[in-house]
Image (cartoon, rainbow, N blue to C red; front, side, top):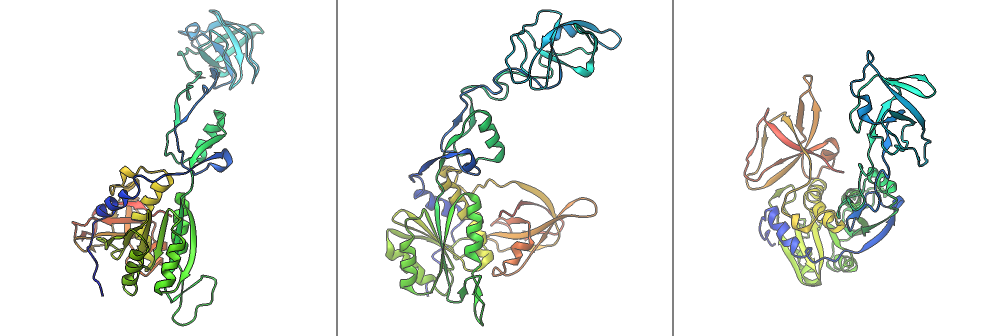
Length: 419
């Protein structure tokens, strides 16, 4: 039986994968607002209008010239003549001169000459034509200026931006109802293993339900992929070869279990038989995830994932997810250097951890606050075949390849467990 070709660091994986992603052509589709949530923009989105399109009040009160209120207080108010009122949703033809004010509702258009709004609480109405101001205002107080939110010609969303719910509102406010976005990349997931059965089937002795294709597809769909669970393929050369061949129209093919000890040599041979260049990497210096296979068949990346659920999940989260982010258009291929976009925070480790030096190790942890309010990271240890380790955890601790472990009480960096 062949040994692992080499335990490659993740950086080597990135460099080899980048060669086949750098010239990838991405298809684009035009989406309406209701379909654009969580999609990736394929171009800069530029505003064609000013927002707001006019200067408007943020309070109920009186539009004024700020200089007319200088020095005003409850003990020594200033007096202003009311020249009219502004109707909500209508353009005003009023223009203020020195010493004048106009009643304005929240959101109402400021009249010409006004540069501040006096809150109604800071006024006393003398009669129908006169108010007194009990507050001194600064220019721009209680006002949103024209184009203060965004100006015509400014970029609202950059190319590669994932559209969020709050973005939908901003686009609607600018009158942008159609957005060019990258199409979802098709990812095919093939499960291998004669012991596997579908989740809905009754398990007999020696059988186990398929976990990986469901957890992986759910995770990658959340990232913006269009995952196709091919199903369970028997551990036979021709069966697996035909399944991979039939799905090479996908941007990415994942074989769950195709790198395991029992069928790894068969998987390597069939991948090499399907097209050029074939297998380009076998073996990674990460734990769990050591037996990962990276291959390319006539331009399509095919990755053999470990069969154990925690191993398969770790490789997907650490490596495959970054490739999918490139295929969705969210991440530039030049950024595939091992740096991730996760947000890290610190917690105190609850116990000692020993790690294999020379391999990056990813350990699920449960983060909680102790009685003093400090964040505690409690490692969840177990074999890579146990999916419940990930279910119980809510974050991940990474131990670098040059480290031999971590000490109890040490402050460590952790990231939230995605998916």
